[in-house]
Image (cartoon, rainbow, N blue to C red):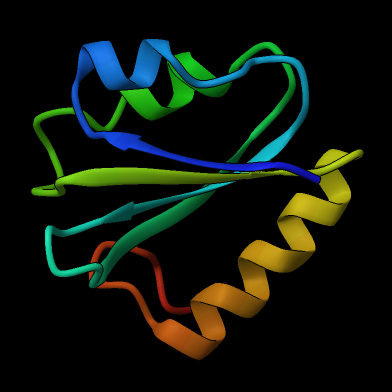
Length: 91
């Protein structure tokens, strides 16, 4: 599926597609992964906006999937492999 990277602010987030479930990654300016999560179709922008002001990040990268289950499976692998600073490490 598609991927997209935008600036981590309200304007950047509003440019993200909302039509498919996604895995999103909040990254610092140096591409260090701070947080990863999933969002269902129709909730992508809202879910990412929930993190504004809480996690210091410069970019948001999304990867679209055909189902939320596929996105959640990839999320678990990413968290296990990268151990992002703001994720619960027990996933």
